[in-house]
Image (cartoon, rainbow, N blue to C red; front, side, top):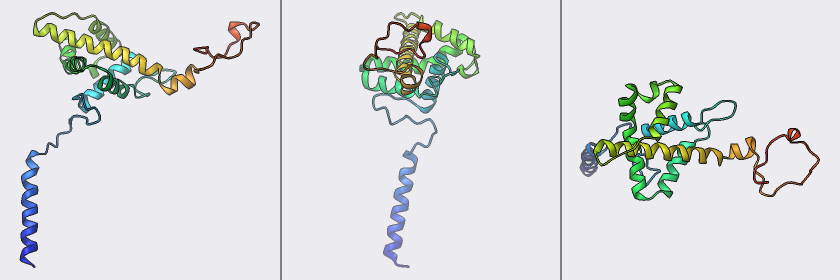
Length: 190
């Protein structure tokens, strides 16, 4: 074997070994799609569970089926101010602790009714200047923002706008002799 090639391979291997300790191979990495937010995959899953509790699947698709958590994160990342992004992220981070203190279980282990009650009480939390009060205010801000953006993303989804409530940009023809009970689907904006 050529000594130069062997030294080159040895240098490449030792350089690679130096870089390995700096690599983080944990499964809960920060998602790179959102530049302004530091959201992990487990937090995104929790956000999906919360939005699915707000609008569950039934006869029609729910919020999780329509990928509303992605909409929420994109809206927070692109449209919220830096201060509000920090409050949203702090509330998302503090939410599991709030659930543990309130229900003594993880959010995923709660029944649907308990999840709904927990979210409703969480939206009404009020904060003060203490660290616990700031945490309550962040959780309340996070839940209220999530609720608002879940409804917005759900109602603006292609599925709702085309299949459930057909959107009409231009109002249809006027027919005054038709009974309301004879109409098939409601037409919004016209």
